Amino acid sequence: MSLVLRETLNAFRRAPLLSALSITTIAFSLFVFGLFGLVAVNIRRAIGSVAERVEVVAYLKRGTMLETVAVASADIEAFPEVERVAHVTELEALARARRDLTEFQDIFQDLEVNPLPASLEVRLKPPFRDAAHVAEVARRLRSFTFVDDVRYGRDWVEKLDRLRNIAGAVGAVVGAAFALVAIIIIGTTIRMAVLQRSREIAIMRLVGATDRFIRLPFLLEGLVKGTLGGVLAVGLSLGAWALINSTLIRAAFFSPAQAALGIVAGGLLGLAGSALAVGRHLRSV
Image (cartoon, rainbow, N blue to C red; front, top):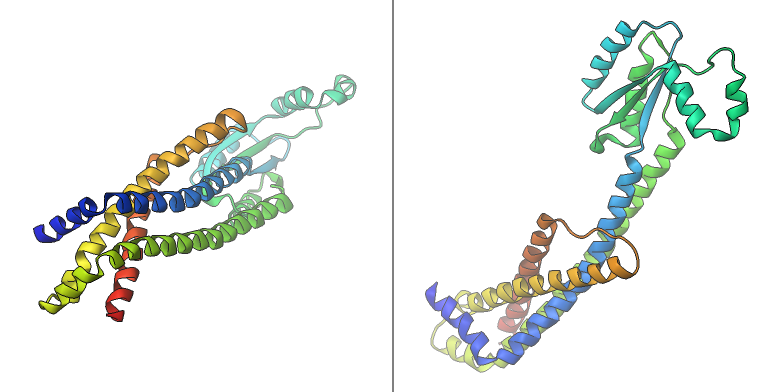
């Protein structure tokens, strides 16, 4: 293993300019992939912020006892999909309507009886803010005898589901395309290094070196170059994000885990590209 590490380091020392060019090329190919990742992250977060408003509202029959509501609220909060339950009394509903619907102030002032019912506002946990789970929670709420009606904006939730699915499908397809392009660029870059050392490989073959022994230094070199390129790509993405954030729109950056995953992905793409380039060369000689 020490011999493999020494050969890898020697490859960097023998051709520092080519190594720097390889790392830079890998970095820019991953940077383009990273820019798409930033767009995907922000679209995902935007959809998530919209999904936070998904809730199920159960309107209660008049005269429902507070003790009954309290017991039911505890039962509903025990649902695996439910994040929290808020009880809105009739007076609170009227006060909210007066605050939010200012154009109807004259009508509210002339009211002799409060027409607005009390309700339970049920907020769902992030993994369950889709049409199927919302409909299931609404169905269970309707089974309570004191519930008069249940509303959750079915059409709106279904449109949100479709938007989430479209964004996921487009992200997967475009992401796979960018990853393939990155592998091709990295493979071509590593192949340049392989061709530069083709005489050395031929000599190693003549003295009885196995394909595995020949391949290992190049694989390690691809892994190192890919990792360094990933680090540089994350740095470039950070610079682009800072520029966009200060001049155009407020955007979110990768989380530390996502940035680390990008660096690991760079290393794996470098390894894959190197494996393809070396394997192709060894089959041709």
